Length: 377
Ligand code: FES
Ligand SMILES: [Fe+2]
Image 1 (cartoon, rainbow, N blue to C red):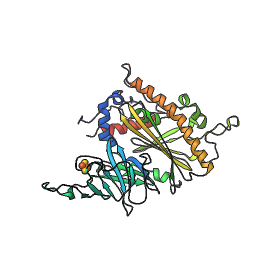
Image 2 (cartoon, rainbow, N blue to C red):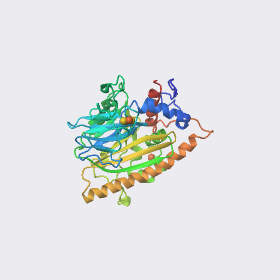
Image 3 (tube, protein in one colour):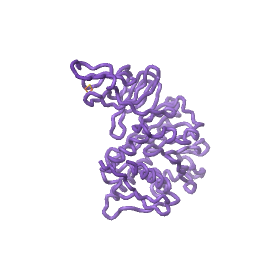
Image 4 (cartoon, protein in one colour):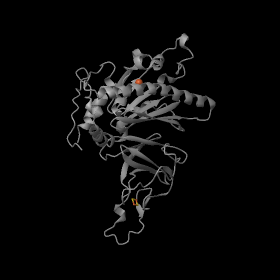
């Protein structure tokens, strides 16, 4: 592991800056440094609060009101999130203090957690209370062998974990997002659908691509019909950015083939990206999240989840289907772009480019944050 600060050499003035050098996208050693300095120092979305008890399908990372848990993975670290009988939410490393077995698998409802290897047992507040056959072990003090706690905070239904005891609170990362989303009714929001996509590119290629609308006219003809590209803009804040993509006024000839008809209130859609790997899209009647998870230096998982209030009404079922299908169309186009860019970044002919001052300020902002985090040891 490199212990020196990494220097990204991205000029803080976008006008003078060159883009990130290609090795940051192609070198497996860089990803290991990013896991330690970025993914384990920032707030990572790991799941959501829900009414019902967590299903054991491993996908719905939800946790119910009382005595339940789910497991997840944060940058290669197994974690567990639990809720005790008083409703207190906690997160721990899901690594047993005995010989590193998983304390829990999947998700479920339990009032104690028994390691899946030799049966050491922990309470939901992390204490080790059961250790079969340890008689004769010298200086064995159970009270010092509890599950390793992690920081855990929530915003509305969303549960975040941070490995860094010194990191700023979640509220510092979210900035003004909760205030801006104030008109949205979070109460009663239910998980509607999840789509996973595995993409052959570095995670930053996907994030770079998300953060600019510059490619929309060329690469997303369907999306281009929906938005007023001339007014498209990105505003940057301390740890997040917001994209404004006003819905285009409807022309009569294209009525019927538009995804978001003006007048439905969707003009107020809010699109946020929170450093380093979370997108939150807030519409008047639903929320979706995209989580970008590096699987290797050239393989990235993107997890799309949709949340609606009423999953049963026929109108909403149709809305959910259309939202998912539209997002899937755009995503397939983006996957093609990102995989091609990753190939280009591997080329001996390319190292760095320049930013569009007008259209790529969000990408530059992301790269400055990368420089800040990778520059700290
Ligand atoms: S590794 Fe957990 S009980 Fe042995
Ligand atoms: Fe795109």
